[in-house]
Length: 119
Ligand code: HEM
Image (cartoon, rainbow, N blue to C red; front, side, top):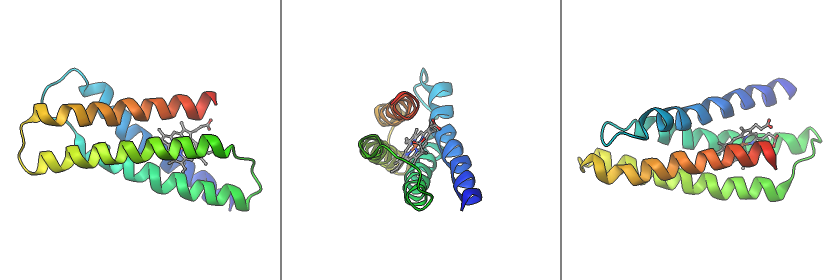
């Protein structure tokens, strides 16, 4: 169980990097957004986060559920923004219309990192 928990934390950090890495690298651009990586990261955060929460319960770790619910709500918004941006990219929309979704996903993921660490 402990190994699985640590394994999921590694996945959680990789998912975080897949959202925030492209965001920091491309936030000043107007085209070529790596929105597929951001979407993959958003899905990874939801899946690993929910599994971590379940396992923490089994391992008798104390979690702050107000913090977890807040992170979950923000992560859902990150996912929806990434999904809408990804669908626009797939339908061939111009890159400028993807930018707000890319920024929303990246910016809110950063908010979640701050919450995870400081709360
Ligand atoms: C964009 C989405 C997310 C980001 C950027 C994020 C970020 C982080 C970070 C940086 C940590 C390490 C904190 C530390 O060890 O001090 C962490 C841990 C954790 N996250 Fe997330 N997270 C996200 C979504 C979620 C979701 C949706 C859930 C659950 C529903 C969740 C549950 C957890 C749990 C259980 C831990 C380990 C326990 C803890 O220290 O709070 N996370 N997350």
